Image 1 (cartoon, rainbow, N blue to C red):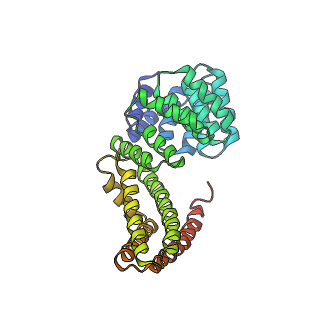
Image 2: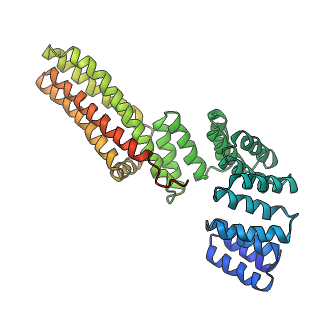
Image 3: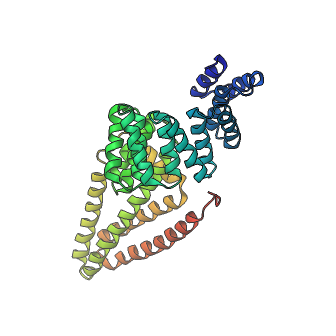
Length: 338
């Protein structure tokens, strides 16, 4: 590899994308058909998410060195990001055919197949990546992500855990395992994993988005709980003493369930949760409304008027309509072309 190409590659790996591009283009001004410089430029543009330009550089590298694996790999990745999935899969397959034992080619082909929705093939290729480099965390993370998309949650969990055994500081694996916990209705474990991911990579934007998802799950659990206990409360509402006892039991049990959910969460979770709730207006309204349900039961406990528990039903119905509206709005894609 030429010194210019090597320097551009190093700068790109360090995240100094503008410098890497400048070095690669200066080198290409003197050697416009150098496949290594074209590859370095294409890889830099891939990091910069400038896929049209990166594809042009990759295709020029393919023309200059048609039997080299890397240009075809880069071409496949750019095509995939541009949504040209059949061409991307074909290019990825060619890269793998040229270098069957190259882990980077296998990983890229896995990614291309995954984005194309060909999950069975992606899963088989991801297993091959792990077979090629079993001691690398990145290989297990690729297999975990594909398994998660394919619905094999047992395999996904095992591979995320394998990733973290090799690399305990892997923030992406921590986040994705937490997301898997959220999908399998384990909100407390998911929150704990998200806090760990946030500590490892405070700039990771996915953490706060997933915290919001988990809080919506918790809000649904609270709604179901209040709906069930209100049936009992209304059945006993005629007797003030029984109404007070029921309200006290509801409040005590609600507090106990809340403590059980949060007891093992790390320090700092409350601040993150508050920030997530404040940042999502419908979620703010949801938790304020659920707090009103608690106040209704406080009123029943104080007054002994069991019929007041019917207010919880009114609150839950209003909350249900609001949530339905939120879901309809958020199902509308912001980027229809994707």
